[in-house]
Length: 131
Image (cartoon, rainbow, N blue to C red; front, side):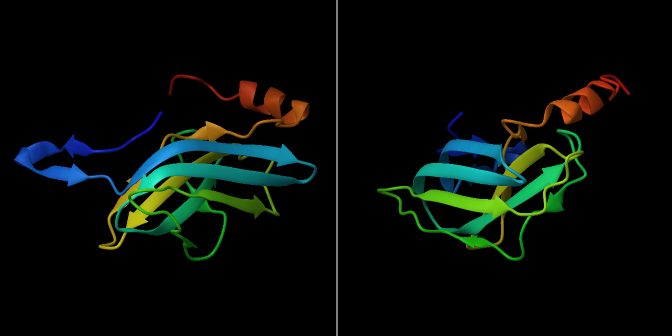
């Protein structure tokens, strides 16, 4: 889902999100995971961080060093892609974070990588749903 505009936070403060995320899709391609995403607009965005985890709630590990630099503008978003050359078959969940120029981090919903190997799907089915 796209996220944009103003979000009401507690204590009567408002936070303006720095990006409008149009899509986020990690997918296994051979022995790597290609992570593609697109924005519709970006305002004061410094860059992105891609994370992976064994579960949709973490803990999260960075896929790359530093930030993927922002390339979009308020008038026009951008397309991005990175390759996870060392994916963990037991960590098929990916998550995107955008970091604004003031260092504020916005995390986006976790997504399971498409084309995940069948044997790994069996492993995931063994994780208890309720803790």
